[in-house]
Image (cartoon, rainbow, N blue to C red; front, side):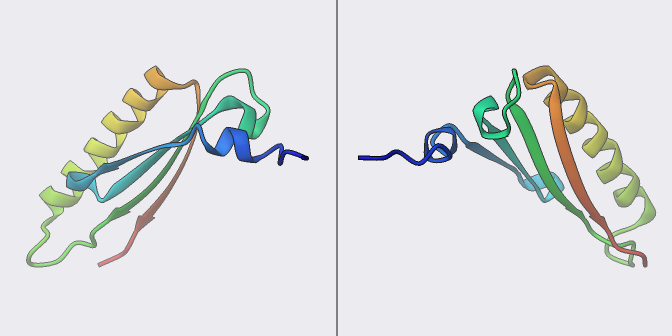
Length: 88
């Protein structure tokens, strides 16, 4: 039986959700991308500024994102982050 070369690395994917930041982290096995180290992928949504979500909230969210990115570099040297920052 032939094995799919992409199936094995996909079994090594771990997902973490950071509720406070509306952020999803995916740790991918190095074999998935052909790197020597694992890869962290991130998708994040930061609420737009509004009466309910003030500039201070936006600032805190962006600061939290930078903290998350700093932590991700401790887990894996390669990462990609896609952030949605909506204007007010």
